[in-house]
Length: 456
Image 1 (cartoon, rainbow, N blue to C red):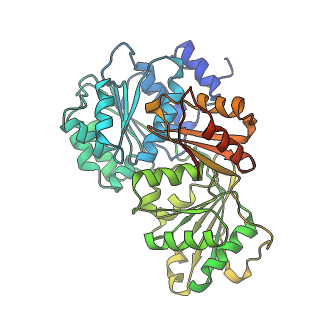
Image 2: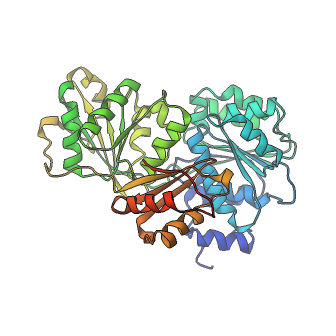
Protein backbone atom coordinates (compact mmCIF):
# COMPACT_ATOMS: atom_id res chain seq x y z
CA UNK A 1 0.00 0.00 0.00
CA UNK A 2 2.95 2.31 0.54
CA UNK A 3 3.42 2.78 -3.20
CA UNK A 4 -0.19 3.85 -3.62
CA UNK A 5 -0.37 7.66 -3.43
CA UNK A 6 -4.00 7.44 -2.26
CA UNK A 7 -2.79 5.80 0.98
CA UNK A 8 -1.62 9.23 2.18
CA UNK A 9 -5.24 10.38 2.30
CA UNK A 10 -7.41 10.02 5.43
CA UNK A 11 -9.51 7.18 4.01
CA UNK A 12 -10.68 3.87 5.45
CA UNK A 13 -8.68 0.71 4.78
CA UNK A 14 -11.69 -0.72 2.91
CA UNK A 15 -11.85 2.25 0.56
CA UNK A 16 -8.08 2.23 -0.01
CA UNK A 17 -8.15 -1.50 -0.78
CA UNK A 18 -10.94 -0.96 -3.30
CA UNK A 19 -9.10 1.95 -4.92
CA UNK A 20 -6.03 -0.26 -5.25
CA UNK A 21 -8.07 -3.14 -6.74
CA UNK A 22 -9.49 -0.73 -9.32
CA UNK A 23 -5.92 -0.03 -10.44
CA UNK A 24 -5.58 3.53 -9.15
CA UNK A 25 -1.98 3.81 -7.94
CA UNK A 26 -0.98 7.36 -8.81
CA UNK A 27 -3.16 10.41 -8.45
CA UNK A 28 -3.82 12.63 -11.43
CA UNK A 29 -3.07 16.35 -10.97
CA UNK A 30 -6.70 17.23 -10.20
CA UNK A 31 -6.94 14.39 -7.67
CA UNK A 32 -3.68 15.34 -5.99
CA UNK A 33 -4.60 19.04 -5.74
CA UNK A 34 -8.31 18.77 -4.97
CA UNK A 35 -8.77 15.67 -2.79
CA UNK A 36 -7.05 16.98 0.37
CA UNK A 37 -9.40 20.01 0.33
CA UNK A 38 -12.47 17.95 -0.61
CA UNK A 39 -11.82 15.56 2.28
CA UNK A 40 -11.62 18.55 4.66
CA UNK A 41 -15.16 19.42 3.55
CA UNK A 42 -14.11 22.62 1.76
CA UNK A 43 -15.82 24.00 -1.32
CA UNK A 44 -13.69 23.51 -4.43
CA UNK A 45 -13.83 25.03 -7.92
CA UNK A 46 -11.57 23.04 -10.24
CA UNK A 47 -10.59 23.63 -13.84
CA UNK A 48 -9.94 20.21 -15.34
CA UNK A 49 -10.65 18.72 -18.74
CA UNK A 50 -12.66 15.58 -19.49
CA UNK A 51 -10.60 12.48 -18.77
CA UNK A 52 -8.53 14.17 -16.05
CA UNK A 53 -9.77 11.92 -13.25
CA UNK A 54 -12.13 14.46 -11.69
CA UNK A 55 -14.93 11.88 -11.24
CA UNK A 56 -12.66 9.86 -8.97
CA UNK A 57 -11.69 13.05 -7.12
CA UNK A 58 -15.21 14.12 -6.23
CA UNK A 59 -16.41 10.50 -6.04
CA UNK A 60 -14.00 9.62 -3.23
CA UNK A 61 -15.00 12.78 -1.40
CA UNK A 62 -18.72 12.08 -1.76
CA UNK A 63 -18.50 8.40 -0.76
CA UNK A 64 -16.24 9.12 2.20
CA UNK A 65 -19.12 11.01 3.86
CA UNK A 66 -22.01 8.66 3.05
CA UNK A 67 -23.77 7.17 6.04
CA UNK A 68 -25.49 4.03 4.76
CA UNK A 69 -27.89 3.84 7.71
CA UNK A 70 -29.36 7.20 6.66
CA UNK A 71 -31.80 6.67 3.78
CA UNK A 72 -31.98 10.36 2.83
CA UNK A 73 -30.21 11.68 -0.26
CA UNK A 74 -26.80 12.84 0.96
CA UNK A 75 -25.19 13.88 -2.34
CA UNK A 76 -26.41 15.31 -5.64
CA UNK A 77 -24.30 15.32 -8.82
CA UNK A 78 -25.58 17.38 -11.75
CA UNK A 79 -24.31 16.58 -15.27
CA UNK A 80 -25.12 18.17 -18.66
CA UNK A 81 -26.29 14.97 -20.40
CA UNK A 82 -27.72 11.56 -19.64
CA UNK A 83 -24.68 9.85 -21.16
CA UNK A 84 -22.31 11.67 -18.82
CA UNK A 85 -24.61 11.04 -15.84
CA UNK A 86 -24.55 7.32 -16.60
CA UNK A 87 -20.76 7.33 -16.88
CA UNK A 88 -20.43 9.17 -13.57
CA UNK A 89 -22.85 6.76 -11.88
CA UNK A 90 -20.90 3.75 -13.18
CA UNK A 91 -17.65 5.21 -11.83
CA UNK A 92 -19.25 5.94 -8.46
CA UNK A 93 -20.63 2.41 -8.21
CA UNK A 94 -17.16 0.99 -8.74
CA UNK A 95 -15.73 3.27 -6.08
CA UNK A 96 -18.61 2.39 -3.75
CA UNK A 97 -17.82 -1.33 -3.70
CA UNK A 98 -15.86 -0.88 -0.45
CA UNK A 99 -19.14 -0.49 1.44
CA UNK A 100 -22.31 -2.50 0.82
CA UNK A 101 -25.79 -1.09 0.25
CA UNK A 102 -24.81 2.37 -1.03
CA UNK A 103 -27.65 3.22 -3.40
CA UNK A 104 -26.90 5.43 -6.42
CA UNK A 105 -29.83 6.58 -8.55
CA UNK A 106 -29.80 8.20 -12.01
CA UNK A 107 -32.47 10.84 -12.71
CA UNK A 108 -32.36 11.95 -16.35
CA UNK A 109 -34.78 12.78 -19.12
CA UNK A 110 -35.48 10.06 -21.66
CA UNK A 111 -36.42 7.51 -18.98
CA UNK A 112 -39.98 6.92 -17.75
CA UNK A 113 -40.55 9.33 -14.89
CA UNK A 114 -42.91 6.93 -13.04
CA UNK A 115 -40.13 4.36 -12.68
CA UNK A 116 -37.95 7.09 -11.20
CA UNK A 117 -40.77 7.95 -8.77
CA UNK A 118 -40.91 4.32 -7.68
CA UNK A 119 -37.14 4.18 -7.19
CA UNK A 120 -37.17 7.38 -5.14
CA UNK A 121 -39.70 5.83 -2.75
CA UNK A 122 -36.98 3.40 -1.67
CA UNK A 123 -34.49 6.23 -1.11
CA UNK A 124 -31.06 6.91 -2.64
CA UNK A 125 -27.86 7.95 -0.91
CA UNK A 126 -26.51 9.60 -4.09
CA UNK A 127 -28.50 11.07 -6.97
CA UNK A 128 -26.80 11.67 -10.33
CA UNK A 129 -28.87 13.51 -12.91
CA UNK A 130 -29.47 16.26 -15.41
CA UNK A 131 -30.75 19.65 -14.17
CA UNK A 132 -34.17 19.54 -15.86
CA UNK A 133 -35.22 16.10 -14.64
CA UNK A 134 -33.84 16.62 -11.12
CA UNK A 135 -35.74 19.92 -10.90
CA UNK A 136 -38.95 18.22 -12.02
CA UNK A 137 -38.68 15.66 -9.20
CA UNK A 138 -37.98 18.42 -6.70
CA UNK A 139 -40.94 20.52 -7.85
CA UNK A 140 -43.27 17.50 -7.70
CA UNK A 141 -41.94 16.68 -4.22
CA UNK A 142 -40.70 13.24 -5.19
CA UNK A 143 -37.09 14.14 -4.30
CA UNK A 144 -36.04 15.87 -1.08
CA UNK A 145 -32.59 17.32 -0.45
CA UNK A 146 -32.95 18.37 3.18
CA UNK A 147 -30.34 15.75 4.16
CA UNK A 148 -27.89 16.59 1.35
CA UNK A 149 -24.31 17.29 2.41
CA UNK A 150 -22.47 17.42 -0.93
CA UNK A 151 -23.50 19.15 -4.17
CA UNK A 152 -21.43 18.53 -7.31
CA UNK A 153 -21.65 20.45 -10.60
CA UNK A 154 -19.79 18.35 -13.19
CA UNK A 155 -18.83 19.80 -16.59
CA UNK A 156 -20.37 23.10 -15.47
CA UNK A 157 -19.24 24.91 -18.63
CA UNK A 158 -21.31 22.56 -20.78
CA UNK A 159 -24.38 22.99 -18.59
CA UNK A 160 -24.08 26.74 -19.08
CA UNK A 161 -23.56 26.32 -22.84
CA UNK A 162 -26.72 24.19 -23.00
CA UNK A 163 -28.79 26.83 -21.20
CA UNK A 164 -29.22 25.02 -17.87
CA UNK A 165 -28.23 27.94 -15.64
CA UNK A 166 -31.83 28.80 -14.65
CA UNK A 167 -32.62 25.16 -13.80
CA UNK A 168 -29.42 24.89 -11.77
CA UNK A 169 -30.32 27.98 -9.75
CA UNK A 170 -33.80 26.57 -9.10
CA UNK A 171 -32.31 23.24 -7.96
CA UNK A 172 -29.98 25.07 -5.59
CA UNK A 173 -32.97 26.69 -3.85
CA UNK A 174 -33.99 23.18 -2.74
CA UNK A 175 -30.59 22.43 -1.16
CA UNK A 176 -29.49 23.17 2.43
CA UNK A 177 -27.41 26.29 2.98
CA UNK A 178 -24.89 24.29 4.96
CA UNK A 179 -23.43 22.03 2.31
CA UNK A 180 -20.19 21.32 0.48
CA UNK A 181 -20.27 22.45 -3.15
CA UNK A 182 -17.80 21.10 -5.71
CA UNK A 183 -17.72 22.73 -9.16
CA UNK A 184 -15.75 21.24 -12.06
CA UNK A 185 -15.34 23.00 -15.38
CA UNK A 186 -12.95 22.76 -18.33
CA UNK A 187 -13.06 26.54 -18.80
CA UNK A 188 -13.50 29.54 -16.50
CA UNK A 189 -15.70 32.01 -18.39
CA UNK A 190 -17.18 34.88 -16.40
CA UNK A 191 -20.49 33.00 -15.97
CA UNK A 192 -18.71 30.12 -14.20
CA UNK A 193 -16.96 32.46 -11.79
CA UNK A 194 -20.26 34.24 -11.09
CA UNK A 195 -21.93 30.86 -10.46
CA UNK A 196 -19.12 29.89 -8.08
CA UNK A 197 -19.47 33.12 -6.12
CA UNK A 198 -23.23 32.63 -5.78
CA UNK A 199 -23.23 28.96 -4.71
CA UNK A 200 -19.87 28.40 -3.00
CA UNK A 201 -18.29 29.65 0.22
CA UNK A 202 -14.57 30.49 0.24
CA UNK A 203 -13.96 27.97 -2.54
CA UNK A 204 -10.46 26.63 -3.04
CA UNK A 205 -9.46 27.31 -6.66
CA UNK A 206 -7.73 24.36 -8.37
CA UNK A 207 -6.38 24.70 -11.92
CA UNK A 208 -4.63 21.67 -13.37
CA UNK A 209 -5.02 22.23 -17.11
CA UNK A 210 -1.38 23.34 -17.46
CA UNK A 211 -0.04 20.30 -15.57
CA UNK A 212 -2.16 17.72 -17.41
CA UNK A 213 -0.36 15.96 -20.24
CA UNK A 214 -1.66 17.20 -23.61
CA UNK A 215 -3.33 14.68 -25.87
CA UNK A 216 -0.98 13.20 -28.49
CA UNK A 217 -2.80 14.16 -31.68
CA UNK A 218 -1.51 14.54 -35.24
CA UNK A 219 -3.74 17.05 -37.03
CA UNK A 220 -4.32 16.93 -40.80
CA UNK A 221 -6.27 19.39 -42.94
CA UNK A 222 -7.25 18.21 -46.43
CA UNK A 223 -8.57 20.52 -49.13
CA UNK A 224 -11.23 18.70 -51.14
CA UNK A 225 -14.03 19.35 -53.62
CA UNK A 226 -17.43 18.67 -51.97
CA UNK A 227 -18.17 15.85 -54.43
CA UNK A 228 -14.95 14.07 -53.40
CA UNK A 229 -15.59 14.06 -49.64
CA UNK A 230 -17.12 10.58 -49.51
CA UNK A 231 -14.25 8.92 -51.41
CA UNK A 232 -11.79 10.83 -49.22
CA UNK A 233 -13.43 9.34 -46.14
CA UNK A 234 -12.64 5.85 -47.42
CA UNK A 235 -9.08 6.90 -48.29
CA UNK A 236 -8.64 8.32 -44.78
CA UNK A 237 -9.63 4.99 -43.24
CA UNK A 238 -7.38 2.93 -45.51
CA UNK A 239 -4.42 5.31 -45.14
CA UNK A 240 -4.42 5.54 -41.33
CA UNK A 241 -6.17 2.24 -40.45
CA UNK A 242 -8.04 3.38 -37.33
CA UNK A 243 -9.92 0.97 -35.08
CA UNK A 244 -12.79 3.39 -34.48
CA UNK A 245 -13.76 6.87 -35.68
CA UNK A 246 -16.09 9.72 -34.77
CA UNK A 247 -17.07 11.84 -37.77
CA UNK A 248 -18.42 15.27 -36.86
CA UNK A 249 -20.95 16.98 -39.11
CA UNK A 250 -22.54 20.40 -38.74
CA UNK A 251 -26.10 19.26 -39.53
CA UNK A 252 -28.36 16.33 -38.66
CA UNK A 253 -29.01 15.61 -42.34
CA UNK A 254 -25.28 15.25 -43.02
CA UNK A 255 -24.91 12.69 -40.22
CA UNK A 256 -27.58 10.54 -41.86
CA UNK A 257 -26.09 10.97 -45.36
CA UNK A 258 -22.57 10.07 -44.22
CA UNK A 259 -23.76 7.06 -42.20
CA UNK A 260 -25.79 5.73 -45.14
CA UNK A 261 -22.84 6.10 -47.51
CA UNK A 262 -20.52 4.17 -45.19
CA UNK A 263 -23.11 1.44 -44.65
CA UNK A 264 -23.33 0.96 -48.43
CA UNK A 265 -19.54 0.61 -48.44
CA UNK A 266 -19.74 -2.25 -45.93
CA UNK A 267 -18.77 -0.25 -42.84
CA UNK A 268 -21.02 -0.36 -39.79
CA UNK A 269 -21.68 3.31 -39.14
CA UNK A 270 -24.43 4.83 -36.99
CA UNK A 271 -25.71 8.40 -36.86
CA UNK A 272 -26.02 10.26 -33.55
CA UNK A 273 -28.16 13.39 -33.81
CA UNK A 274 -30.93 15.31 -32.09
CA UNK A 275 -33.69 13.46 -33.95
CA UNK A 276 -32.99 10.25 -32.01
CA UNK A 277 -35.07 9.20 -29.04
CA UNK A 278 -33.11 8.60 -25.84
CA UNK A 279 -33.27 4.80 -26.19
CA UNK A 280 -31.89 5.13 -29.73
CA UNK A 281 -29.03 7.33 -28.48
CA UNK A 282 -28.22 4.73 -25.85
CA UNK A 283 -28.32 2.00 -28.49
CA UNK A 284 -25.86 3.85 -30.76
CA UNK A 285 -23.49 4.74 -27.96
CA UNK A 286 -23.42 1.23 -26.49
CA UNK A 287 -22.59 -0.32 -29.86
CA UNK A 288 -19.85 2.22 -30.53
CA UNK A 289 -18.22 1.91 -27.11
CA UNK A 290 -18.34 -1.90 -27.09
CA UNK A 291 -16.74 -2.04 -30.57
CA UNK A 292 -19.74 -3.46 -32.41
CA UNK A 293 -19.85 -0.33 -34.54
CA UNK A 294 -16.70 1.20 -36.05
CA UNK A 295 -17.96 4.68 -36.91
CA UNK A 296 -20.25 7.12 -35.13
CA UNK A 297 -21.37 10.11 -37.19
CA UNK A 298 -22.48 12.90 -34.87
CA UNK A 299 -23.46 16.52 -34.51
CA UNK A 300 -21.80 18.51 -31.73
CA UNK A 301 -25.00 18.79 -29.72
CA UNK A 302 -25.68 15.05 -29.88
CA UNK A 303 -22.10 14.23 -28.87
CA UNK A 304 -22.07 16.45 -25.77
CA UNK A 305 -21.20 14.50 -22.65
CA UNK A 306 -20.01 11.43 -24.56
CA UNK A 307 -16.62 10.34 -23.30
CA UNK A 308 -14.89 7.57 -25.30
CA UNK A 309 -11.68 6.49 -23.59
CA UNK A 310 -10.03 4.82 -26.60
CA UNK A 311 -10.67 6.60 -29.89
CA UNK A 312 -8.28 6.25 -32.83
CA UNK A 313 -9.50 9.06 -35.07
CA UNK A 314 -11.71 12.12 -35.31
CA UNK A 315 -12.80 13.47 -38.70
CA UNK A 316 -14.38 16.90 -39.19
CA UNK A 317 -16.52 16.47 -42.30
CA UNK A 318 -16.27 20.24 -42.58
CA UNK A 319 -14.60 22.87 -40.39
CA UNK A 320 -16.47 23.56 -37.14
CA UNK A 321 -17.98 26.96 -36.48
CA UNK A 322 -15.31 28.07 -33.99
CA UNK A 323 -11.92 27.18 -32.49
CA UNK A 324 -13.39 26.03 -29.19
CA UNK A 325 -15.58 23.46 -30.94
CA UNK A 326 -12.58 22.23 -32.94
CA UNK A 327 -10.53 21.77 -29.76
CA UNK A 328 -13.37 19.95 -28.05
CA UNK A 329 -13.92 17.64 -31.04
CA UNK A 330 -10.34 16.53 -31.56
CA UNK A 331 -9.69 16.29 -27.81
CA UNK A 332 -11.67 13.05 -27.78
CA UNK A 333 -8.75 11.18 -29.37
CA UNK A 334 -5.15 10.73 -28.22
CA UNK A 335 -6.06 10.17 -24.58
CA UNK A 336 -4.35 8.23 -21.79
CA UNK A 337 -0.95 8.44 -23.47
CA UNK A 338 -2.14 6.95 -26.77
CA UNK A 339 -1.68 8.63 -30.12
CA UNK A 340 -4.63 9.95 -32.06
CA UNK A 341 -5.36 11.36 -35.50
CA UNK A 342 -7.60 14.34 -36.31
CA UNK A 343 -8.57 15.11 -39.90
CA UNK A 344 -10.49 18.14 -41.15
CA UNK A 345 -11.95 18.43 -44.66
CA UNK A 346 -12.41 21.89 -46.17
CA UNK A 347 -13.38 23.24 -49.58
CA UNK A 348 -12.27 26.33 -51.52
CA UNK A 349 -15.22 28.24 -50.06
CA UNK A 350 -14.23 27.22 -46.54
CA UNK A 351 -10.56 28.07 -46.91
CA UNK A 352 -10.98 31.35 -45.03
CA UNK A 353 -12.23 29.42 -41.97
CA UNK A 354 -9.07 27.39 -41.53
CA UNK A 355 -6.48 30.17 -41.88
CA UNK A 356 -6.56 30.66 -38.11
CA UNK A 357 -5.65 26.98 -37.64
CA UNK A 358 -2.38 27.20 -39.53
CA UNK A 359 0.72 26.65 -37.40
CA UNK A 360 3.98 24.68 -37.45
CA UNK A 361 2.51 21.46 -36.07
CA UNK A 362 -0.62 21.04 -38.22
CA UNK A 363 -0.30 19.43 -41.65
CA UNK A 364 -2.12 20.93 -44.65
CA UNK A 365 -2.40 19.11 -47.97
CA UNK A 366 -4.62 18.45 -50.97
CA UNK A 367 -7.11 15.62 -50.52
CA UNK A 368 -6.01 14.02 -53.78
CA UNK A 369 -2.51 13.49 -52.31
CA UNK A 370 -3.83 10.95 -49.79
CA UNK A 371 -3.00 7.36 -50.67
CA UNK A 372 -4.62 4.40 -48.99
CA UNK A 373 -4.47 0.63 -48.84
CA UNK A 374 -7.14 -0.67 -51.20
CA UNK A 375 -7.36 -3.96 -49.29
CA UNK A 376 -8.20 -2.33 -45.95
CA UNK A 377 -11.78 -2.30 -44.68
CA UNK A 378 -12.74 -0.84 -41.34
CA UNK A 379 -14.49 -3.74 -39.61
CA UNK A 380 -15.88 -3.83 -36.08
CA UNK A 381 -14.54 -6.88 -34.18
CA UNK A 382 -17.70 -7.43 -32.13
CA UNK A 383 -21.44 -7.78 -32.46
CA UNK A 384 -23.94 -6.94 -29.73
CA UNK A 385 -26.40 -9.29 -28.06
CA UNK A 386 -29.45 -7.51 -26.68
CA UNK A 387 -31.21 -9.26 -23.80
CA UNK A 388 -34.71 -8.20 -22.76
CA UNK A 389 -33.77 -8.31 -19.10
CA UNK A 390 -32.03 -5.75 -16.90
CA UNK A 391 -31.82 -4.20 -13.45
CA UNK A 392 -35.58 -4.48 -12.94
CA UNK A 393 -35.21 -8.24 -13.42
CA UNK A 394 -32.22 -8.40 -11.02
CA UNK A 395 -29.89 -9.32 -13.90
CA UNK A 396 -26.22 -8.61 -13.21
CA UNK A 397 -23.11 -8.76 -15.44
CA UNK A 398 -21.90 -11.86 -13.59
CA UNK A 399 -25.15 -13.68 -14.37
CA UNK A 400 -24.75 -13.08 -18.10
CA UNK A 401 -21.05 -13.89 -18.05
CA UNK A 402 -21.76 -17.15 -16.23
CA UNK A 403 -24.47 -18.16 -18.69
CA UNK A 404 -22.14 -17.58 -21.63
CA UNK A 405 -19.00 -19.19 -20.21
CA UNK A 406 -20.60 -22.14 -18.40
CA UNK A 407 -23.63 -22.97 -20.51
CA UNK A 408 -22.47 -21.83 -23.95
CA UNK A 409 -18.82 -22.80 -23.24
CA UNK A 410 -17.63 -19.50 -24.70
CA UNK A 411 -14.17 -18.44 -23.57
CA UNK A 412 -14.25 -15.26 -21.48
CA UNK A 413 -11.77 -13.60 -23.86
CA UNK A 414 -14.54 -13.54 -26.50
CA UNK A 415 -16.87 -11.56 -24.26
CA UNK A 416 -16.47 -7.80 -24.10
CA UNK A 417 -18.34 -5.00 -22.37
CA UNK A 418 -21.61 -5.83 -20.59
CA UNK A 419 -24.02 -2.92 -20.04
CA UNK A 420 -27.05 -3.40 -17.81
CA UNK A 421 -29.97 -0.95 -18.06
CA UNK A 422 -33.39 -1.00 -16.41
CA UNK A 423 -35.09 -3.44 -18.79
CA UNK A 424 -32.35 -4.39 -21.27
CA UNK A 425 -28.77 -5.64 -21.26
CA UNK A 426 -26.16 -5.30 -24.00
CA UNK A 427 -23.28 -7.75 -24.40
CA UNK A 428 -20.33 -7.34 -26.79
CA UNK A 429 -19.33 -10.70 -28.31
CA UNK A 430 -16.61 -11.51 -30.83
CA UNK A 431 -18.24 -11.96 -34.23
CA UNK A 432 -16.96 -15.49 -34.79
CA UNK A 433 -18.85 -16.79 -31.72
CA UNK A 434 -21.89 -14.49 -31.78
CA UNK A 435 -24.22 -17.15 -33.24
CA UNK A 436 -23.19 -19.68 -30.59
CA UNK A 437 -23.81 -17.11 -27.87
CA UNK A 438 -27.16 -16.15 -29.37
CA UNK A 439 -28.43 -19.72 -29.66
CA UNK A 440 -27.32 -20.57 -26.15
CA UNK A 441 -29.08 -17.59 -24.52
CA UNK A 442 -32.13 -17.96 -26.77
CA UNK A 443 -32.64 -21.57 -25.71
CA UNK A 444 -31.19 -21.27 -22.22
CA UNK A 445 -31.80 -19.27 -19.07
CA UNK A 446 -30.21 -16.50 -17.01
CA UNK A 447 -30.76 -16.85 -13.26
CA UNK A 448 -33.35 -19.48 -14.00
CA UNK A 449 -35.37 -17.19 -16.29
CA UNK A 450 -35.79 -17.11 -20.07
CA UNK A 451 -35.36 -13.74 -21.80
CA UNK A 452 -35.88 -12.71 -25.44
CA UNK A 453 -32.51 -12.19 -27.15
CA UNK A 454 -31.44 -10.73 -30.49
CA UNK A 455 -28.31 -9.63 -32.34
CA UNK A 456 -27.53 -6.01 -33.17
